[in-house]
Amino acid sequence: MNFEPTESKEVSQKSPFAGCAIFITAALVMLFLVVFSVVVLFRQFDAISKFTGEEPAVIEIVSLEDKDAELNELAEKIEVFRLKVVADESAVLALSVTEINLAISAFDSFKDLRGMFRVIEITPELMKFDISFKLNGKPRLPKEGEPGMMGSDPRYLNGVLVAKPGLLNQEFVLQVVDINVTGAEVPEEFLEQMSPYRIAERYIGTDGIGKIMAQLTDVSLAEGVLRFEKEAGAAPKDTISNEQVDDASQRLFTFLGIAALIFLLLVAIILFFGLRLKKRQEAEAAQE
Image (tube, rainbow, N blue to C red; front, top):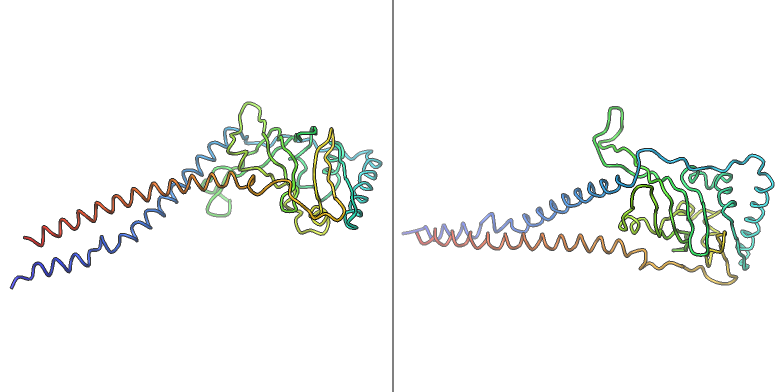
């Protein structure tokens, strides 16, 4: 009695290649996504290094010397606005370039902005700021004495930030229009990822600034001033749509999805022809 066909059939049914096809595909896709993400990450760091520096720029901090009268006037103006907002009355707080920079220097709530952020101009259309933002550098192995498994050398985005103010989810934000860096050009993709810049994120949920910010109904610009408005009886509303915020992220995920789909298609083609070849070889072995 000839048992060869039966043995061949059992081998075919228990083919490791066929049984592991899904696992192999999943593993390859995961490997592809990891490698692709690492490549994109390092390309991003290389691109960022072209318009950032190794050292921070010197951003002027307003001196508080002989500024007692100005500080008292500013504090009174802010307090009057705060009381009206709490009482649900209509109110407008208009701050000039000088007052905003003075507030950054004087009030502890804004101490994190000192030395990295300063208003230089306000027009009815735009605001301009001197900035020196600290960014993460390219990952590297840690130097001697550094904690953790990975380290990096920081980069600094030094230049002039051009933006429009707005409200999003009861938060004051800046819609980034442009960043002017001497001797370099900031890519549009970076601007889209950075906008809106959540300069007031740290105040969300706090009793002071956060509580007042959550009641604002509008924020606008006039010549030389930034205006915060509260309309009596009106619910807080956004001046920036979620669609505007999500545009850049959606493009990124679309790109990643297309790349993954193409890779999956290639893997499927390879598996398909591999399985066909395997079956042909088994059929030939069964006939012998």
